[in-house]
Every structure is written in structure tokens, then in C-alpha cells.
Length: 74
View 1: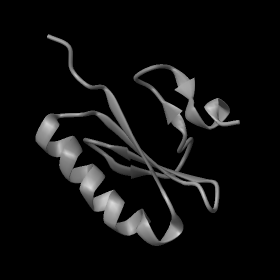
View 2: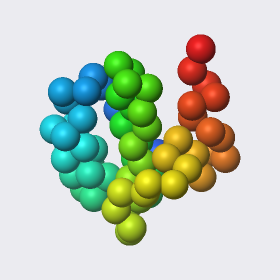
View 3: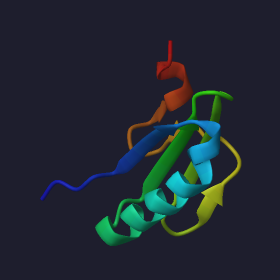
View 4: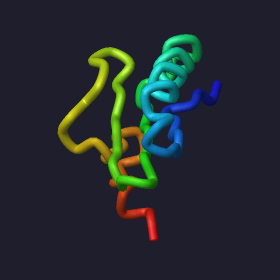
């Protein structure tokens, strides 16, 4: 059975708080270990771990795929 390992939400500064709540709910309901929000206006990544909550360090590093998501932006 294939399961989703990570989800990414791209939003603007005003939407971060609302999208963070939505992201965490989706992670819990669907048992998704990692979630990310990218604020494209400020260029800031927010990372959430299903077990540990918000992660401040290495906020764009996705363990599920072994990639720094920030490096995928151009």
C-alpha cells in the first residue's frame, strides 16, 4: 500500500496561519509524517512533523525524499 509521505502547501503571508491548521489536520487524518508550508512572498519555509509538531531547524529539508525543498525553487 502506497502512502503519502509529505505534503506541501504554497501560500502567501496572510494565509500561513490558516494553512498551517489545515495542513496539520490533513497530516493527522491521513497519517502523513511530514508537512511543509512555503510563504512565497517572504521566501520562508515552515515544517511540521506529525509526532513533534513544528520544526524550526532545517525547515525545508524533507526526510521522506531526502531533498532540501528550497533547492527545488528557481
